[in-house]
Length: 250
Image 1 (cartoon, rainbow, N blue to C red):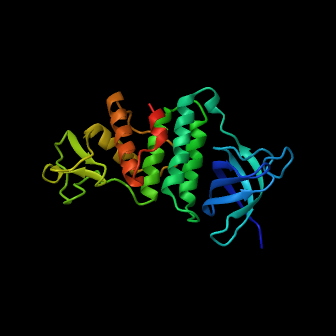
Image 2: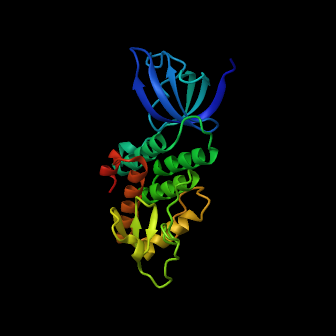
Image 3: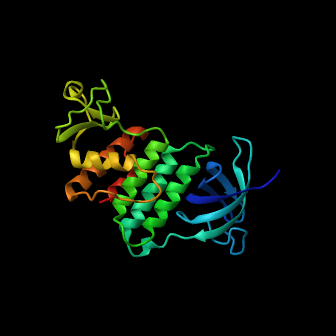
């Protein structure tokens, strides 16, 4: 059986025995995989202490037929996430990137553009400069677009009626997956108010190539809160429960 080689982001590491662990990674060529890393917990191993959450590694593994786990044979560290030691906000934002990759992607589906987006997002979160929550929101909108879950922001998601040009606020229904008009809003739960500024910013990011946190238009503090609330509620509706890391995003 030929060994596969790929770049990968470490998503989760679970102790399996005194010397081994089970690792979930998001790879560029093979999507999300889970494999057994035998001997990874020994002081001297072919994994060289590379299997830390948020680390970027060069991975070598043997693909197995489901339901068997893949066998990880080697990992070389390319980059370790270090910003969390000085900035918890960046650490929690990076953890949320990991959480979304874990819960919203299927195993074995190759999506190189999503891998590139995630790697670039983690790199930006690991450096000083841009607001970490703005970087995170741009990642989320890119991920939703790539996975086919992009929220409807230009017309009513229920009836298709275009939103009025003069409207300054919109009703966003996380369960329906987008803006709902006045007629369709009746009786719906989980409806949030969305300003035109926040809506336009989300559309602006949705039209980008997601090759990094371009940012674009600067958002007011209130609109930043709205975007965070909309994304939180929408993502929770997709997975069916509240994602724990959201409690630490502020």
